Length: 178
Image: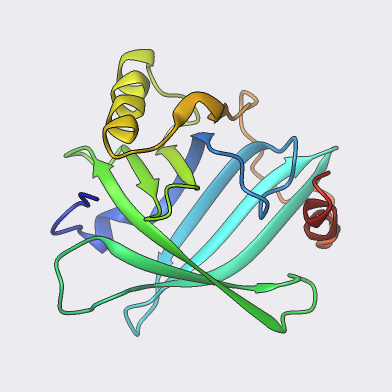
């Protein structure tokens, strides 16, 4: 699978909105306004905050991302979360490969070598249809079955505050497919 080479982590930091994804059991079902915020840590790792709103409540999980091979210029990262989020005892590690990013770092295609998880991210909570279709084509070219991709609903304006917390119960619901 082709990945981005020479990813500038400093430019990659900040907030990204999920435009679409292949459904993941580690995300709240029926989530809206889904976003990720990345912050570079002093040790070179990345603090990850994933947020989504479901039934009027904010579900979130925090983790850490790091390059698989610090000496490589390939954008292959691992991301580690502890589950359940309210009692962080079990580490869950996944692949986070940047498959495509535009020159201005405004949109990106993220995947995994298993081709089971896929995300289209953008700095804005919307993406023009031509760019969206180009990213879907790139995913298809990389072997993803995009017929089940789910477009993420976003409100305008997006929520800025935290809102009432789900307290991690979305994680239990996701185990049972709810």
